[in-house]
Length: 171
Length: 103
Image (cartoon, rainbow over all chains, first blue to last red; front, side, top):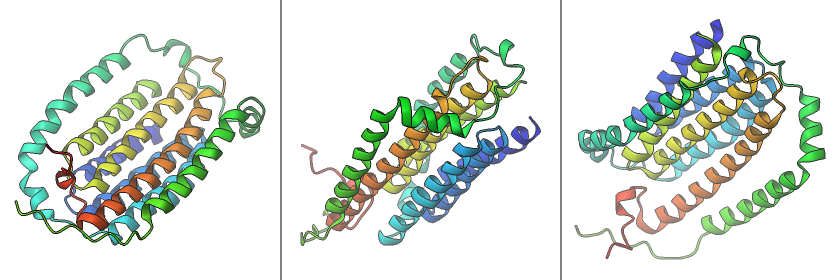
């Protein structure tokens, strides 16, 4: 419980930074920090395997991919993004606050907390592997097919096509 | 406060922050950052309910998280490839410039 109380505000602060920072690189690095802190949270509440997977896939894969994409593309007009702040902030808050209210309302109803005083045992990795490769083999194969398709698709999308870049719009 | 409501509140706030990024950012890569935050919030919910939910819970939660992480990685790869392809055409990652279908 104590690690939870320490980690939760840190996760929220890092996520807030990832959402708020105007510089894209800062936002991407704060996203990596958020994902790492969530992985640490998994480690502390007994889902060690999921935490390690999160470290490997999210930090080692997704976050690095995003940082590389930011390196390849131009940083973009940060000033323009700052210009739009008040308006986009208002629109964003107007859409987001009802969702937050709805989620908190849903989570405050009928939680099975009475039976959850004592936590379930920590994640048994052997049982998870058994479940994965005995009962969910079709799903594993489907994910394999999906990842192959993604590999080919991403390579096709990102290849050099020889298209001329459009002239900048005159607006 | 027991861990379950705390974790659920944390994941609701994470989800909302991601949604806010998706709605308010103009840089396509930063919209993707918001989507990753939302996926993480969903994963956190799966883990929270598996760990602190009813006692006879089986391993469905962690299984779902494993598949969800794989699909999130695939989504990030395809999304960034599309953004790069578009960047090569328009020299920009600004979503407001993706208006060629605008009548």
